[in-house]
Length: 93
Length: 270
Image (cartoon, rainbow over all chains, first blue to last red; front, side, top):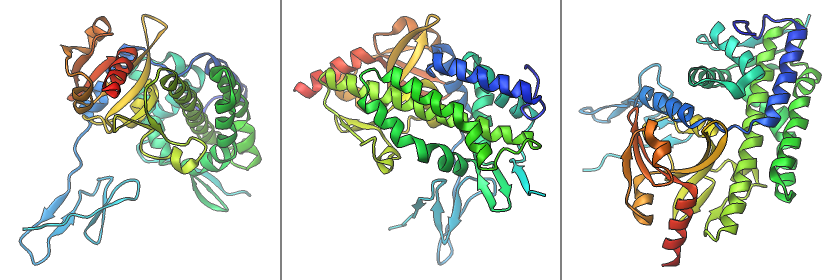
């Protein structure tokens, strides 16, 4: 089915695809070859970029912001992580 | 007329529609490049949703409601009670995987005039596979650690809350996870390992299974400390000796699982 998209195949082809999945799923236990595993890990790590949080100092109260495309969000100066947990920065001197 | 639409993230393109189908058909034979696209595809599908008259249902919520919630506990109990985890697990996986299209169809989430809904089937199959084979491996390793005399604290797999904890076990006070190689790639995406150690299974030389432990430096310092600096290409030659690898900005200590167990037992005996 090379080059075909999942929503553009016939119902019969889809049924065959599902049957193939049940077949290989029983024989393959999700263990990648070492070269594939380390190669994918290396490329994911290489692409990983730190998440940026900007803290504006100098005003009476520091303000925390994140770039618009960040997976983080800000709620009342708290940094909201992707899983909903919050990170609160406390500045002490 | 029934209101039904599959809502996909803007980034989701034909290449992702192709790889979703290819994964269903032959995910076990994917190349490094195909896995990179597949991981991105299933990440994007996590942001996808189904729009029906009942509202917007994220794919992840559909998977949980119709697959994991009704079948997970029974599946895990069957593994814990089984003498042969693999045999029981494969049968349990296949039973549910074979039902997934029917379950989604009965729930009205797979209308025949909406072939894009097959993406939802692929998503549920992908995560059910990850769930089933992940716990099969975890239970096999926990049994082996116990039999090998390694002291550890593990979460209670029967409790969903504990299953969702950020780590699977603690050894020598270090938190770790037990991951199939594919599951490791779904969680450890950055330059640093999120947890202190990961027990991972790979294949080498065609099909021979190898268990390795990937660690952060502090755990290795506690149990041994000596490594050979090597490259990924030469790692297979270095094992079972422990290796310090740096790739793509990431680094870790990689040790053969049997060596790791021996060193942990030695440290725990002190």
